[in-house]
Length: 442
Image 1 (cartoon, helix red, strand yellow):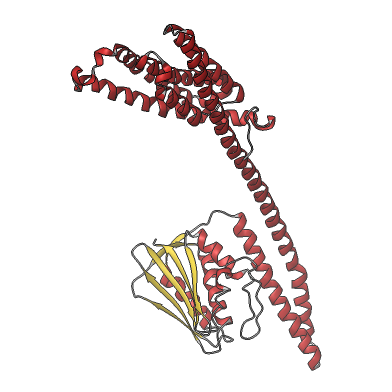
Image 2: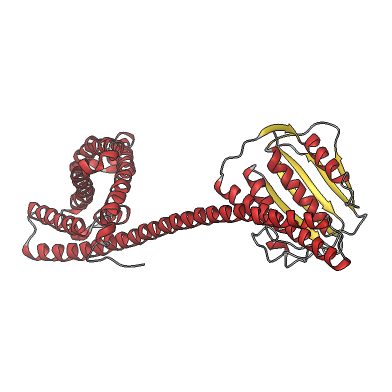
């Protein structure tokens, strides 16, 4: 924390900080005036509820007089602070009025403490508790610029001096009281400046965080734009390479050339898959809204499972386990299809041929649970916290050598969270993995 005991914060931030603390001070006046008013109401009730024999109130008539004054004046400050807060949008026009008002209320509260101390004994040196409380309250809950703090300190000293003159203190008592007051005001000055420094440092940190967030958002938007453009532009040359490979297949090829052509085709498929993942990442980052429809998840999942079952190259048995009754949720069909496809593909990648893969659906009181469970290799314990990270280091080759981009599960989590859902994974090595999605019930 940087200290500003004898200066203000840097010039470029001063106007914004003054506006910020002005609003905070107005809100503090509302609370302080209400609390002070309630305190005086309680004191006034004490006059009615307790007898003079108990309170000896007749010995201190000034307390009763000042109590009525406080009850009359304090609500005016509360009303004025509420009005100024409502009109704070016009701060630049009201800046001087607000500044004077804050100083006026601070002086009023400190004066109340001084007067109460004087009434007790006519010798403030013997009873400074209320004076101290008033100064500490002002020093802690209000934030003043250096000039305002200095002005309030000097103004308080002037008021204290006038009170001493009113009390007709002898020269010795006058000096002692002034000395004590100066010590107390010195403490008030440093408390006030410490509060200013603390809140100024907090304000500067907030500004820095806000600026960093804006820079991050701009960098992220630029990254997504570049990512989308690059991925989109790569489709054409890869499509051309794949077309040439298909044309080459029409000729009579020797075994080596045929293997090379197949390798080119497989590489093109893999490259196209990576491009699709990159485009999906950029699309999800740039689009915060997701159009959804209320659909029966059982029907949606059944369609997806059937599509995988009908693929000739898939040897695994993929089954849907669900209750007979319909289960509804608000989903985006295309995006949600990609989620389940990705999880099933992931399960196949790490399962042996003919291993069963289960897609489970059930409904709780307020949520829908979807699980994709396999009985394959499982995920090492040290990799579990990273499986949903983008370009995750948890990416591994499948049982048949399939490569991983580290984007699939990151995209799954993005889409699930855009559905206001959550996804988690449970896994044990050599026993399989279960990916569990929880969505709001539709």
